[in-house]
Image 1: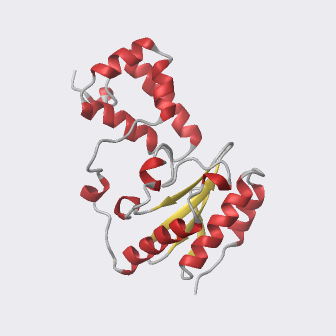
Image 2: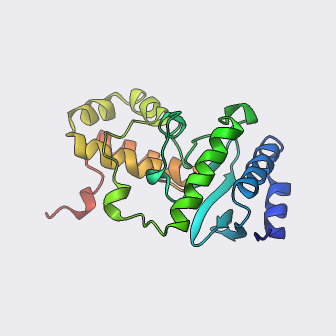
Length: 202
C-alpha cells in the first residue's frame, strides 16, 4: 500500500490559499489512481514515488503545477499536455481548480504513468526529445515583443537555436529560476548571442 508523508501536509498548509484546494485535489486523485504511491519531499516539493520517480506537485506565488516524470511517454488524446506545455509541470500553470482537466482525464494519465513504471519502461535521452517543434510559451513571446532588438535577432536564428532557448526556459524548475533565465535570454538575444555562446571557441 502507499504511504503519506506529514511533510506534504505541512507543505500544503503553508501554500497560498488559492493553491491549497488544487494540491489537495491532485493528491487525492494520485492516491486514488495509484494506491501504491509513496510520498516524499524532493527539491522542496511534494513528490510521489512508485517503483521509481513518478510525479510531483508544487505551488508558487500565483500558480500550482502537476508534473509526471515520464510525460513524454504518456498518451494524450485530449491534448491537455501539449495545450498547457508553457511552464514547469505536465499541465502547465494551474491557478484554480477550473484550470484542471476533468478527474477522468487526470486519473487516466496517472494510470498510464503507473503502467509505465510497472512495465519498467525507461525514459531514454532519445525519447525525451520531442518529435515535433517546441511551441514558444506566451511569457517568452511577450518578453521578446517588448524588446525590438531581441525580437529581430531571434527571428533570424535557425530553428535549432530558437529551440534551445525555448527548452531552457520551459524546463526551469521554479518560477524564480525561469524569471532569471528569461532575463538572461533577452539580454543575450538582444546581442545576437545563441544560448550556449559562452562555450563557443574564440
